[in-house]
Figure 1 (cartoon, rainbow, N blue to C red):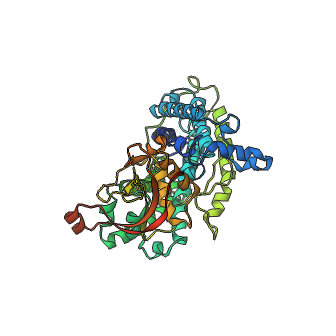
Figure 2: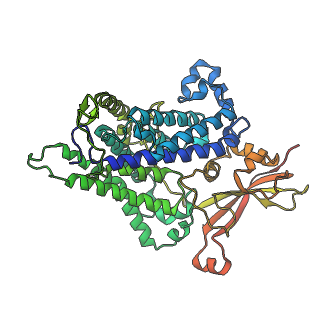
Figure 3: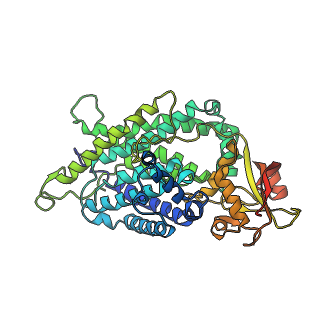
Length: 500
Protein backbone atom coordinates (compact mmCIF):
# COMPACT_ATOMS: atom_id res chain seq x y z
CA UNK A 1 0.00 0.00 0.00
CA UNK A 2 1.09 3.60 -0.52
CA UNK A 3 0.18 4.55 3.04
CA UNK A 4 -0.35 2.76 6.32
CA UNK A 5 -2.67 5.06 8.21
CA UNK A 6 -0.68 8.11 9.28
CA UNK A 7 2.65 6.82 7.93
CA UNK A 8 3.48 7.09 4.22
CA UNK A 9 5.57 3.93 4.38
CA UNK A 10 6.41 3.80 0.65
CA UNK A 11 7.46 7.44 0.39
CA UNK A 12 10.85 7.34 2.05
CA UNK A 13 12.61 7.98 -1.26
CA UNK A 14 10.22 10.86 -1.96
CA UNK A 15 11.18 12.39 1.38
CA UNK A 16 14.87 12.06 0.55
CA UNK A 17 14.38 13.97 -2.70
CA UNK A 18 12.19 16.60 -1.06
CA UNK A 19 14.47 17.31 1.88
CA UNK A 20 17.74 17.27 -0.03
CA UNK A 21 16.36 18.98 -3.14
CA UNK A 22 14.64 21.81 -1.28
CA UNK A 23 17.75 22.30 0.87
CA UNK A 24 19.89 22.52 -2.28
CA UNK A 25 17.56 25.19 -3.68
CA UNK A 26 17.87 27.17 -0.45
CA UNK A 27 21.63 26.94 -0.86
CA UNK A 28 21.32 28.47 -4.34
CA UNK A 29 18.91 31.14 -3.07
CA UNK A 30 21.22 32.23 -0.26
CA UNK A 31 24.18 32.20 -2.65
CA UNK A 32 22.27 34.42 -5.07
CA UNK A 33 21.46 36.76 -2.18
CA UNK A 34 25.06 36.81 -1.00
CA UNK A 35 26.29 37.84 -4.45
CA UNK A 36 23.58 40.31 -5.40
CA UNK A 37 21.66 41.72 -2.43
CA UNK A 38 24.21 44.33 -1.37
CA UNK A 39 24.56 46.18 -4.70
CA UNK A 40 20.81 45.88 -5.34
CA UNK A 41 19.32 46.42 -1.89
CA UNK A 42 22.11 46.94 0.60
CA UNK A 43 23.19 50.09 2.42
CA UNK A 44 24.24 51.67 -0.89
CA UNK A 45 21.96 49.58 -3.08
CA UNK A 46 19.70 50.69 -5.89
CA UNK A 47 16.69 50.34 -3.55
CA UNK A 48 18.26 50.41 -0.07
CA UNK A 49 16.56 48.05 2.35
CA UNK A 50 17.47 50.22 5.38
CA UNK A 51 15.40 53.04 3.89
CA UNK A 52 12.41 50.68 3.58
CA UNK A 53 12.80 49.53 7.18
CA UNK A 54 13.00 53.12 8.39
CA UNK A 55 9.89 54.01 6.40
CA UNK A 56 7.98 51.09 7.92
CA UNK A 57 9.13 51.94 11.43
CA UNK A 58 8.14 55.59 11.04
CA UNK A 59 4.46 54.90 11.65
CA UNK A 60 2.88 52.18 13.74
CA UNK A 61 0.14 51.62 11.16
CA UNK A 62 2.71 50.64 8.54
CA UNK A 63 4.41 47.89 10.53
CA UNK A 64 2.10 45.14 9.29
CA UNK A 65 2.81 46.16 5.71
CA UNK A 66 6.08 44.24 5.95
CA UNK A 67 6.19 40.44 6.14
CA UNK A 68 8.13 38.90 9.05
CA UNK A 69 11.84 39.63 8.99
CA UNK A 70 14.67 39.37 11.49
CA UNK A 71 15.73 42.84 10.42
CA UNK A 72 12.73 44.32 12.21
CA UNK A 73 14.38 43.33 15.49
CA UNK A 74 18.01 43.46 14.42
CA UNK A 75 19.17 46.58 12.58
CA UNK A 76 20.07 45.78 8.99
CA UNK A 77 23.71 46.08 7.94
CA UNK A 78 25.43 44.56 4.95
CA UNK A 79 27.70 42.65 7.31
CA UNK A 80 24.72 41.03 9.06
CA UNK A 81 23.21 40.15 5.69
CA UNK A 82 26.43 38.35 4.78
CA UNK A 83 26.42 36.43 8.07
CA UNK A 84 22.80 35.39 7.48
CA UNK A 85 23.64 34.14 3.99
CA UNK A 86 26.65 32.12 5.10
CA UNK A 87 24.70 30.58 7.97
CA UNK A 88 21.85 29.77 5.60
CA UNK A 89 24.19 28.12 3.12
CA UNK A 90 25.83 26.07 5.88
CA UNK A 91 22.50 24.77 7.20
CA UNK A 92 21.24 24.11 3.67
CA UNK A 93 24.41 22.20 2.78
CA UNK A 94 24.07 20.04 5.89
CA UNK A 95 20.47 19.21 5.02
CA UNK A 96 21.36 18.49 1.40
CA UNK A 97 24.00 16.06 2.70
CA UNK A 98 21.40 14.41 4.96
CA UNK A 99 23.20 15.06 8.24
CA UNK A 100 20.38 16.53 10.41
CA UNK A 101 18.06 13.79 9.13
CA UNK A 102 20.15 11.25 11.06
CA UNK A 103 18.81 12.59 14.36
CA UNK A 104 15.30 12.79 15.78
CA UNK A 105 12.65 14.55 13.66
CA UNK A 106 12.84 17.83 15.54
CA UNK A 107 16.44 18.34 14.36
CA UNK A 108 15.71 18.67 10.60
CA UNK A 109 12.54 20.56 11.61
CA UNK A 110 14.55 23.26 13.35
CA UNK A 111 17.03 23.41 10.46
CA UNK A 112 14.34 23.88 7.81
CA UNK A 113 12.46 26.41 9.94
CA UNK A 114 15.72 28.35 10.29
CA UNK A 115 16.08 28.39 6.49
CA UNK A 116 12.43 29.41 6.10
CA UNK A 117 12.64 32.28 8.57
CA UNK A 118 16.09 33.38 7.38
CA UNK A 119 15.11 33.54 3.73
CA UNK A 120 11.77 35.15 4.55
CA UNK A 121 13.76 37.86 6.31
CA UNK A 122 15.46 38.57 3.00
CA UNK A 123 12.38 38.33 0.78
CA UNK A 124 10.40 40.64 3.05
CA UNK A 125 12.80 43.52 2.41
CA UNK A 126 13.73 42.53 -1.16
CA UNK A 127 11.11 44.77 -2.80
CA UNK A 128 10.86 44.44 -6.58
CA UNK A 129 14.06 42.37 -6.81
CA UNK A 130 12.41 39.62 -4.74
CA UNK A 131 8.87 39.89 -6.11
CA UNK A 132 8.96 36.64 -8.10
CA UNK A 133 6.57 33.74 -7.60
CA UNK A 134 9.35 31.24 -6.95
CA UNK A 135 10.38 33.14 -3.82
CA UNK A 136 7.08 32.35 -2.09
CA UNK A 137 7.19 28.83 -3.57
CA UNK A 138 10.56 28.17 -1.95
CA UNK A 139 9.32 29.56 1.36
CA UNK A 140 6.20 27.40 1.37
CA UNK A 141 8.14 24.29 0.32
CA UNK A 142 10.71 24.94 3.04
CA UNK A 143 8.02 25.23 5.68
CA UNK A 144 6.44 21.93 4.66
CA UNK A 145 9.83 20.20 4.46
CA UNK A 146 10.34 21.07 8.13
CA UNK A 147 7.83 18.37 9.10
CA UNK A 148 8.90 15.46 6.90
CA UNK A 149 10.69 13.80 9.81
CA UNK A 150 13.99 11.95 9.99
CA UNK A 151 15.43 8.74 8.65
CA UNK A 152 14.40 6.38 11.44
CA UNK A 153 10.66 6.64 10.74
CA UNK A 154 8.32 6.87 7.74
CA UNK A 155 7.31 10.34 6.56
CA UNK A 156 3.93 11.54 7.88
CA UNK A 157 1.15 11.02 5.35
CA UNK A 158 -0.37 14.42 6.08
CA UNK A 159 2.83 16.25 5.05
CA UNK A 160 3.23 14.20 1.87
CA UNK A 161 -0.37 15.04 0.93
CA UNK A 162 0.30 18.73 1.62
CA UNK A 163 3.11 18.56 -0.92
CA UNK A 164 0.65 17.12 -3.44
CA UNK A 165 -1.68 20.02 -2.66
CA UNK A 166 1.18 22.48 -3.17
CA UNK A 167 2.02 20.91 -6.54
CA UNK A 168 -1.66 20.98 -7.52
CA UNK A 169 -1.93 24.70 -6.77
CA UNK A 170 1.30 25.35 -8.61
CA UNK A 171 0.39 23.47 -11.79
CA UNK A 172 -3.38 23.86 -11.93
CA UNK A 173 -3.10 27.53 -11.00
CA UNK A 174 -0.67 28.10 -13.87
CA UNK A 175 -2.96 26.25 -16.25
CA UNK A 176 -6.02 28.27 -15.27
CA UNK A 177 -4.09 31.54 -15.60
CA UNK A 178 -3.24 30.59 -19.18
CA UNK A 179 -6.75 29.54 -20.15
CA UNK A 180 -8.13 32.78 -18.74
CA UNK A 181 -5.28 34.84 -20.15
CA UNK A 182 -4.19 35.70 -23.66
CA UNK A 183 -5.90 34.36 -26.77
CA UNK A 184 -2.57 32.80 -27.79
CA UNK A 185 -3.07 30.05 -25.19
CA UNK A 186 -6.50 29.22 -26.57
CA UNK A 187 -5.57 29.29 -30.25
CA UNK A 188 -2.40 27.24 -29.48
CA UNK A 189 0.08 29.86 -30.78
CA UNK A 190 1.64 30.88 -27.43
CA UNK A 191 4.83 28.84 -27.78
CA UNK A 192 5.36 30.08 -31.32
CA UNK A 193 6.54 33.28 -29.57
CA UNK A 194 7.55 32.20 -26.08
CA UNK A 195 10.96 30.66 -26.77
CA UNK A 196 12.06 33.91 -28.42
CA UNK A 197 10.46 36.41 -26.05
CA UNK A 198 10.89 34.67 -22.67
CA UNK A 199 12.75 36.70 -20.02
CA UNK A 200 16.08 34.89 -20.17
CA UNK A 201 16.70 32.42 -23.02
CA UNK A 202 19.01 29.45 -22.59
CA UNK A 203 21.49 27.83 -24.98
CA UNK A 204 18.77 25.64 -26.56
CA UNK A 205 16.03 28.28 -26.73
CA UNK A 206 16.76 29.29 -30.32
CA UNK A 207 16.68 25.69 -31.52
CA UNK A 208 13.33 25.25 -29.75
CA UNK A 209 11.99 28.40 -31.39
CA UNK A 210 12.98 27.19 -34.86
CA UNK A 211 11.02 23.95 -34.53
CA UNK A 212 7.95 23.61 -36.81
CA UNK A 213 4.74 25.45 -35.98
CA UNK A 214 2.87 22.16 -35.54
CA UNK A 215 5.36 21.22 -32.81
CA UNK A 216 4.70 24.46 -30.95
CA UNK A 217 0.96 23.82 -31.08
CA UNK A 218 1.64 20.35 -29.69
CA UNK A 219 3.65 21.97 -26.87
CA UNK A 220 0.65 24.09 -25.91
CA UNK A 221 -1.70 21.09 -25.97
CA UNK A 222 0.76 19.12 -23.85
CA UNK A 223 1.08 22.04 -21.45
CA UNK A 224 -2.70 22.30 -21.01
CA UNK A 225 -2.93 18.54 -20.40
CA UNK A 226 -0.07 18.58 -17.88
CA UNK A 227 -1.43 21.55 -15.96
CA UNK A 228 -5.20 21.20 -16.19
CA UNK A 229 -5.77 17.43 -16.19
CA UNK A 230 -2.75 15.66 -14.71
CA UNK A 231 -2.72 17.45 -11.30
CA UNK A 232 -5.97 15.77 -10.24
CA UNK A 233 -4.33 12.34 -10.52
CA UNK A 234 -1.61 13.29 -8.03
CA UNK A 235 -4.08 12.41 -5.28
CA UNK A 236 -4.74 8.89 -6.59
CA UNK A 237 -2.63 7.18 -3.86
CA UNK A 238 -5.20 8.35 -1.30
CA UNK A 239 -7.42 5.54 -2.59
CA UNK A 240 -5.00 3.16 -0.86
CA UNK A 241 -6.45 4.27 2.45
CA UNK A 242 -9.71 2.55 1.58
CA UNK A 243 -9.79 -1.16 2.56
CA UNK A 244 -9.33 -3.32 -0.53
CA UNK A 245 -12.47 -5.41 0.02
CA UNK A 246 -14.64 -2.34 -0.62
CA UNK A 247 -16.16 -2.97 -4.01
CA UNK A 248 -15.44 -0.39 -6.69
CA UNK A 249 -12.04 0.83 -5.43
CA UNK A 250 -8.84 0.12 -7.29
CA UNK A 251 -6.91 -2.61 -5.45
CA UNK A 252 -3.24 -2.98 -4.69
CA UNK A 253 -0.58 -0.64 -6.12
CA UNK A 254 -2.66 0.75 -9.01
CA UNK A 255 -3.51 4.11 -7.34
CA UNK A 256 0.12 4.58 -6.38
CA UNK A 257 1.21 3.90 -9.96
CA UNK A 258 -1.31 6.47 -11.24
CA UNK A 259 0.07 9.09 -8.88
CA UNK A 260 3.62 8.28 -9.94
CA UNK A 261 2.72 8.55 -13.64
CA UNK A 262 1.10 11.94 -13.00
CA UNK A 263 4.25 13.08 -11.23
CA UNK A 264 6.36 11.75 -14.10
CA UNK A 265 4.41 13.84 -16.62
CA UNK A 266 4.95 16.96 -14.52
CA UNK A 267 8.66 16.18 -14.23
CA UNK A 268 8.95 15.62 -18.00
CA UNK A 269 7.25 18.92 -18.89
CA UNK A 270 9.30 20.84 -16.34
CA UNK A 271 12.51 19.26 -17.65
CA UNK A 272 11.65 20.58 -21.13
CA UNK A 273 11.30 24.05 -19.61
CA UNK A 274 14.65 23.66 -17.87
CA UNK A 275 16.29 22.77 -21.18
CA UNK A 276 14.75 25.66 -23.10
CA UNK A 277 14.86 28.54 -20.63
CA UNK A 278 16.24 30.13 -17.45
CA UNK A 279 13.42 30.47 -14.91
CA UNK A 280 15.61 30.56 -11.81
CA UNK A 281 14.56 27.67 -9.54
CA UNK A 282 10.88 27.62 -10.53
CA UNK A 283 11.10 24.52 -12.73
CA UNK A 284 13.68 22.85 -10.50
CA UNK A 285 11.48 23.34 -7.43
CA UNK A 286 8.48 21.95 -9.30
CA UNK A 287 10.48 18.86 -10.27
CA UNK A 288 11.58 18.30 -6.68
CA UNK A 289 8.04 18.74 -5.32
CA UNK A 290 6.68 16.37 -7.97
CA UNK A 291 8.75 13.55 -6.48
CA UNK A 292 6.41 13.71 -3.47
CA UNK A 293 3.89 11.68 -5.51
CA UNK A 294 6.32 8.87 -6.36
CA UNK A 295 6.04 6.00 -3.91
CA UNK A 296 8.57 3.18 -4.10
CA UNK A 297 7.77 0.06 -2.02
CA UNK A 298 10.66 -1.16 0.06
CA UNK A 299 12.52 2.18 0.05
CA UNK A 300 10.90 3.71 3.10
CA UNK A 301 12.42 4.15 6.55
CA UNK A 302 12.70 0.95 8.58
CA UNK A 303 9.69 0.48 10.87
CA UNK A 304 11.10 -0.50 14.25
CA UNK A 305 9.18 -2.53 16.80
CA UNK A 306 7.69 -0.45 19.57
CA UNK A 307 9.93 -1.95 22.23
CA UNK A 308 13.11 -0.91 20.37
CA UNK A 309 11.95 2.42 19.01
CA UNK A 310 9.91 5.23 20.53
CA UNK A 311 7.83 4.47 23.62
CA UNK A 312 4.68 5.94 22.07
CA UNK A 313 4.05 5.20 18.41
CA UNK A 314 1.20 5.71 15.96
CA UNK A 315 1.91 3.75 12.78
CA UNK A 316 5.64 3.91 13.58
CA UNK A 317 5.50 7.70 14.13
CA UNK A 318 6.25 9.13 17.62
CA UNK A 319 3.15 10.48 19.33
CA UNK A 320 4.53 13.99 19.75
CA UNK A 321 5.46 14.09 16.06
CA UNK A 322 2.02 12.82 15.09
CA UNK A 323 0.42 15.67 17.07
CA UNK A 324 2.75 18.29 15.52
CA UNK A 325 2.21 17.15 11.93
CA UNK A 326 -1.56 16.91 12.34
CA UNK A 327 -1.59 20.46 13.71
CA UNK A 328 0.49 21.62 10.74
CA UNK A 329 -1.93 19.87 8.38
CA UNK A 330 -4.93 21.63 9.90
CA UNK A 331 -3.12 24.97 9.82
CA UNK A 332 -2.15 24.60 6.17
CA UNK A 333 -5.65 23.55 5.12
CA UNK A 334 -7.16 26.58 6.86
CA UNK A 335 -4.60 28.95 5.34
CA UNK A 336 -5.12 27.37 1.89
CA UNK A 337 -8.83 28.21 1.71
CA UNK A 338 -8.28 31.60 -0.03
CA UNK A 339 -5.98 29.93 -2.56
CA UNK A 340 -8.60 27.27 -3.30
CA UNK A 341 -11.24 29.93 -3.90
CA UNK A 342 -8.79 31.84 -6.08
CA UNK A 343 -8.31 28.84 -8.40
CA UNK A 344 -11.93 29.07 -9.47
CA UNK A 345 -12.42 32.83 -9.14
CA UNK A 346 -13.40 34.87 -12.18
CA UNK A 347 -10.51 37.25 -11.52
CA UNK A 348 -7.81 34.79 -10.56
CA UNK A 349 -4.76 36.26 -8.82
CA UNK A 350 -1.32 35.14 -9.96
CA UNK A 351 1.53 34.54 -7.48
CA UNK A 352 -0.42 35.97 -4.57
CA UNK A 353 0.09 35.47 -0.85
CA UNK A 354 -2.89 35.59 1.51
CA UNK A 355 -1.03 35.73 4.82
CA UNK A 356 2.22 37.15 6.15
CA UNK A 357 3.83 33.72 6.58
CA UNK A 358 3.82 32.74 2.88
CA UNK A 359 1.79 29.55 3.42
CA UNK A 360 -1.10 28.52 1.17
CA UNK A 361 -0.16 30.82 -1.71
CA UNK A 362 -1.68 31.13 -5.17
CA UNK A 363 0.65 30.43 -8.09
CA UNK A 364 0.67 30.90 -11.85
CA UNK A 365 2.82 32.37 -14.60
CA UNK A 366 2.69 33.63 -18.19
CA UNK A 367 -1.02 34.26 -18.49
CA UNK A 368 -0.07 36.18 -21.60
CA UNK A 369 2.92 35.74 -23.88
CA UNK A 370 4.88 38.67 -25.29
CA UNK A 371 4.80 38.60 -29.10
CA UNK A 372 7.84 40.81 -29.69
CA UNK A 373 11.17 41.01 -27.88
CA UNK A 374 12.29 44.52 -27.00
CA UNK A 375 15.57 44.92 -25.13
CA UNK A 376 16.85 48.01 -23.38
CA UNK A 377 20.55 48.32 -24.10
CA UNK A 378 22.63 50.50 -21.77
CA UNK A 379 25.45 52.44 -23.42
CA UNK A 380 28.17 54.70 -22.16
CA UNK A 381 30.50 57.23 -23.72
CA UNK A 382 33.82 58.60 -22.48
CA UNK A 383 33.80 61.44 -25.03
CA UNK A 384 32.81 64.94 -24.00
CA UNK A 385 30.61 65.23 -27.07
CA UNK A 386 29.31 61.65 -26.90
CA UNK A 387 30.73 60.72 -30.29
CA UNK A 388 31.37 57.04 -29.55
CA UNK A 389 29.14 54.77 -27.51
CA UNK A 390 29.95 51.39 -25.99
CA UNK A 391 27.53 48.81 -24.58
CA UNK A 392 27.42 47.38 -21.10
CA UNK A 393 26.91 43.60 -21.34
CA UNK A 394 24.66 41.74 -18.89
CA UNK A 395 25.34 38.16 -17.86
CA UNK A 396 22.05 36.61 -18.86
CA UNK A 397 19.91 38.88 -20.99
CA UNK A 398 20.57 39.21 -24.75
CA UNK A 399 23.08 41.84 -25.81
CA UNK A 400 25.86 40.90 -28.22
CA UNK A 401 24.07 39.34 -31.20
CA UNK A 402 26.82 36.72 -31.60
CA UNK A 403 26.80 35.51 -28.01
CA UNK A 404 25.00 32.24 -27.31
CA UNK A 405 22.78 32.52 -24.19
CA UNK A 406 24.09 30.59 -21.21
CA UNK A 407 22.35 28.31 -18.76
CA UNK A 408 22.11 29.98 -15.34
CA UNK A 409 19.06 28.42 -13.70
CA UNK A 410 18.54 27.52 -10.93
CA UNK A 411 20.74 30.51 -10.09
CA UNK A 412 18.74 33.73 -10.22
CA UNK A 413 20.10 36.81 -12.02
CA UNK A 414 17.79 39.42 -10.53
CA UNK A 415 19.04 42.49 -12.38
CA UNK A 416 18.78 40.75 -15.75
CA UNK A 417 15.21 39.66 -15.02
CA UNK A 418 14.09 43.18 -14.14
CA UNK A 419 15.73 44.48 -17.31
CA UNK A 420 13.30 42.22 -19.23
CA UNK A 421 10.34 43.79 -17.43
CA UNK A 422 11.37 47.37 -18.18
CA UNK A 423 10.02 47.56 -21.77
CA UNK A 424 6.70 46.13 -20.58
CA UNK A 425 6.04 49.04 -18.20
CA UNK A 426 4.78 52.50 -18.90
CA UNK A 427 7.87 54.23 -17.54
CA UNK A 428 11.39 53.45 -16.40
CA UNK A 429 11.51 52.40 -12.76
CA UNK A 430 13.35 54.27 -10.00
CA UNK A 431 15.83 51.45 -9.55
CA UNK A 432 16.92 51.80 -13.18
CA UNK A 433 17.72 55.49 -12.77
CA UNK A 434 19.78 54.61 -9.69
CA UNK A 435 21.50 51.89 -11.72
CA UNK A 436 22.57 54.39 -14.38
CA UNK A 437 23.94 56.69 -11.67
CA UNK A 438 26.02 53.80 -10.31
CA UNK A 439 27.43 53.24 -13.80
CA UNK A 440 28.42 56.91 -14.01
CA UNK A 441 30.15 56.49 -10.66
CA UNK A 442 31.85 53.27 -11.85
CA UNK A 443 30.58 51.62 -8.67
CA UNK A 444 32.53 48.35 -8.38
CA UNK A 445 29.80 46.22 -6.70
CA UNK A 446 27.30 47.27 -9.36
CA UNK A 447 29.74 46.59 -12.19
CA UNK A 448 30.33 43.11 -10.72
CA UNK A 449 26.71 42.29 -11.61
CA UNK A 450 27.54 42.78 -15.29
CA UNK A 451 29.35 40.61 -17.77
CA UNK A 452 31.28 43.39 -19.52
CA UNK A 453 32.18 46.89 -18.38
CA UNK A 454 33.43 48.59 -21.57
CA UNK A 455 35.34 51.18 -19.54
CA UNK A 456 37.19 48.69 -17.33
CA UNK A 457 36.39 50.38 -14.06
CA UNK A 458 36.80 53.95 -15.30
CA UNK A 459 33.97 56.47 -15.17
CA UNK A 460 32.11 57.21 -18.41
CA UNK A 461 31.14 60.80 -19.20
CA UNK A 462 27.64 59.91 -20.36
CA UNK A 463 25.21 57.00 -20.22
CA UNK A 464 21.96 56.38 -22.04
CA UNK A 465 19.31 53.70 -22.59
CA UNK A 466 18.42 52.60 -26.12
CA UNK A 467 15.63 50.23 -27.14
CA UNK A 468 16.18 47.48 -29.72
CA UNK A 469 13.91 44.92 -31.32
CA UNK A 470 15.50 41.46 -31.07
CA UNK A 471 14.58 38.28 -32.93
CA UNK A 472 16.33 34.97 -33.41
CA UNK A 473 18.44 34.62 -36.53
CA UNK A 474 17.17 32.14 -39.07
CA UNK A 475 19.33 29.17 -39.96
CA UNK A 476 20.44 30.96 -43.12
CA UNK A 477 21.36 34.14 -41.20
CA UNK A 478 23.21 32.09 -38.60
CA UNK A 479 25.23 30.34 -41.30
CA UNK A 480 25.98 33.51 -43.27
CA UNK A 481 26.71 35.98 -40.46
CA UNK A 482 27.45 33.83 -37.43
CA UNK A 483 24.79 35.58 -35.34
CA UNK A 484 22.32 34.26 -32.78
CA UNK A 485 20.16 37.37 -32.80
CA UNK A 486 19.16 39.97 -35.34
CA UNK A 487 18.33 43.34 -33.85
CA UNK A 488 16.89 46.63 -35.06
CA UNK A 489 17.47 49.87 -33.24
CA UNK A 490 14.35 51.78 -32.26
CA UNK A 491 15.04 54.90 -30.23
CA UNK A 492 16.88 56.44 -27.29
CA UNK A 493 14.66 56.00 -24.23
CA UNK A 494 16.67 57.89 -21.65
CA UNK A 495 19.63 60.24 -21.76
CA UNK A 496 22.29 60.89 -22.49
CA UNK A 497 23.04 62.26 -19.07
CA UNK A 498 26.06 62.48 -16.79
CA UNK A 499 27.13 63.62 -13.36
CA UNK A 500 27.82 67.26 -12.67
